[in-house]
Length: 544
Image (cartoon, rainbow, N blue to C red; front, side):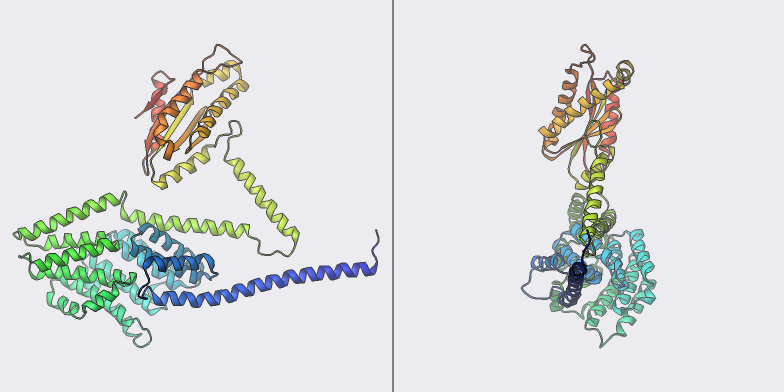
């Protein structure tokens, strides 16, 4: 078919209009995003400047507002990282510790994508300070090492963060009782603070934090007058105002009361005054309400160590509170505190990195042609099919070993109790050798049918072909109490099955059952129990 010159011109004009419209739409989209980022940057600056100072604004409302901003706004990586950090600090004050660490991980991910090294270093310094308060010195030193890898402390451009870096170093040395080195670091920190007097409105706050750290060192050195002189500089109104802000609560209020408790006992080591007891109880209550139980316990232990042995009343007072705090901490922790910190931060960093990678790979940066959209959709569909097929066993239609390993790790992280049933077909090799592999496949398919029936009949049950003639089930939540019933149903159904290729043949299965949660190796226990069943007669279920 021949086209006239007029027709060709019309086609070219239409094509030009379509391409121009698409380019214009993309330009408008990018321009809108640019101006949205500029506007939202001002909002982020305002949120960070407020730092929860507004009276009448609850922590819940503040963090809800920040999360709403994160969800609905368009930001550059720096602003998004700072929003996550600020929300995390508020969650920490609300007592939602795990959410705090997860949000720190989100903040680290975005800040590490940006060019703002100082803010990234600041978060690692926060983590180091938290590890120091937990006496996890190797973990603290690792965080400091990561901070230095990003930017040597001497090269930090933000003077307040540079000052903070040396204060954290001072905290580490002070906790290790390297008091001389700690004071040197504090002097260096204060030197940087003094250099920004008049240019940073928070200079008084930085000085106050350094002074309280110095007072804490003095009381541990036995320099009581020097310690008292620093504490006397601050009035009750200073403390009350600072309590409203997560950062100052951690950097100033908690250390202030800790130092006051240590000083009160050091000044009267052989007495048990009501004022000292009241001060200690108020400090412990503040720590419990703010998520600093470990700091309170460490303080009580320091006081008990410095208390005169013949001060029976104070020794008894401290012992009771130490026991109560220790019990509370043990009940709330199922593994070491430092491992929780690192795992939460690292897991959240990896999860958000993976989510960002998927979003980046599946999102089309341009919609200039219909063909590109179709190709993208086809590629995504292709990979979805591959992923779905890779999770299933082609013969039994059960999930495969890879899916089993993934689901085990996921249910461990949930910290919920669960059971594992390991099932093995008895004498399966003889069946293959005697009747052939096609008939053996029928046996495998029948086991798969029985397991799938249990999956459909019971919520929270997943079935897997573990390998060869071995199968597995993971049982949790509502079905967890019925684990043994499910195992017995599988054993009974197999033993009662009639086989067309050998009507008189009875094929049985052996099963091993184990239950547990979190870090327990439930799979190994179930496998060991299966081995016991096989070695003691087969066609049976063994559990702990």
